[in-house]
Amino acid sequence: MKDTTRIRLDSFYAAALGCAPAELRAGRVVVAESDLERVWFAKARPLLLYGLTTTEGTVIAARLPVATAVRQAVQGAAALDEATWEAMRRAVSALVPRPARLQWFTGVRLVCEPEGFKDCAVWPSGSCSPAWPPSPSGSCSPAGSACPPSSLSAPAALRSGDAKPADTAETREISPAEDLRAAALHSTWGGKVFGRLIDGQVVSWVAVKPLSEVVWDLSVETLPEHRGQGHAKWAVSLALRFVFQEGRLAGWGCDRDNMASLAVARAVGFEEYALDFGCAAGGAAGPWVMRDEDGRACGRSGSGESPSGGSGDGAQRATTSIANYGGDRQNADWSSWRGERLWVGLKSTGTTSGPR
Image (spheres, rainbow, N blue to C red):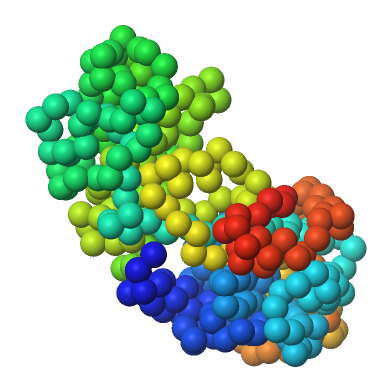
């Protein structure tokens, strides 16, 4: 990864977390108070806290009163090791009454820059990519000059190295009007949706999330019966061409034990930027609500406003608990998982495994 790319990413993620870029590489654990509204790339919502661990430091962004409790728990920590991780979790749990539901997650954030892009699609001779023919192993080859990301098709003789034969295969932008899943993804993220079609059926979708001026994340889905056949790499390659033509970096987030997702990302040129982690509260049936010392609701997640009947400054007085209205998600019991994976893995091998 180029230094200029790392600097752009540090500035982008620091702004989302509410910290200074230098604090991401300060050699210690930093806690920042934040409403977390700019952390749109996190796995779960509503967030109580979200953090990034780079090879040189950790920043934890959290809402009040969680930020105050976490800051006390990790005070003086040089890294997010096992002891610090457990102290942070205990501090958050102490603020949550028994009915509440917490979802802790751990993942990895990756980025692809144009210079590192490896186009995993096989292109016919004479097309805009000079990467033809592919290597005998069917591995990815460096991308060539840009071409319009509109439609890519190939007859049966021109398959990607690991895709099974098919009578007709096509990779192109999928209109929301022609596919229900593409319509749902477009409605959620507002960006283009690219797909891999086999015999006229979309088997893999890649949605672009155009939610910042720096990084556009990709969301990838493949039908279970078509996984492991290289289809996602075709669609991702086309989406990446679009992202780079728009002058953005491509982002990717997934669970640390999602080996299939990581394999696709690395195959097309994504590199690890940081490990991420967080805690969300509330189930699908309702948000979590902060309460003051008298038990009165004083702030809802995601709204930025006090509930009806509450005082405007109530959120500043929330000190004791976070209650859950509705939801049936059970607490994730990851007590056997060791927090040391949160930071050791990236420093040593660039990958870790663990539940998310």
